[in-house]
Image (cartoon, rainbow, N blue to C red; front, side, top):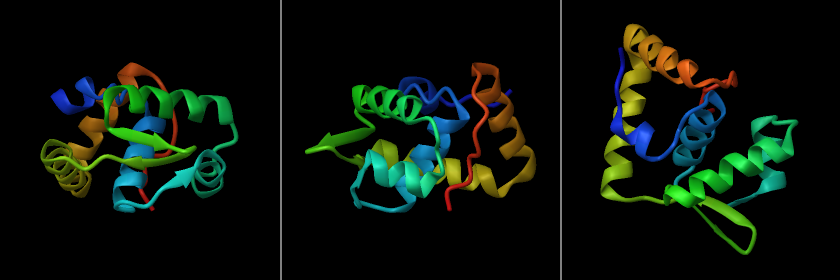
Length: 113
């Protein structure tokens, strides 16, 4: 089974959060309002997105300033996000990761683009 302490410590426990984190990370230091995120990510459930963002803010992986959200870059996060990107390149490793996430629940698209 795929294990990743980063996913656990940052409470990335759903497909939606994984997709959100990967999408934000792919955009560097850009900031987005919650409405912009719903538009870009095609998320219809604003309250679910807001809950996910608040949970990620609580872990320190995402920050919010004046209603704008962005990923927080740190050596640990950068290393772990690069590892997740590499995992997505290998079909078997990617499936193990998705199986692990699905054991938490959720069911959203995890593609970053």
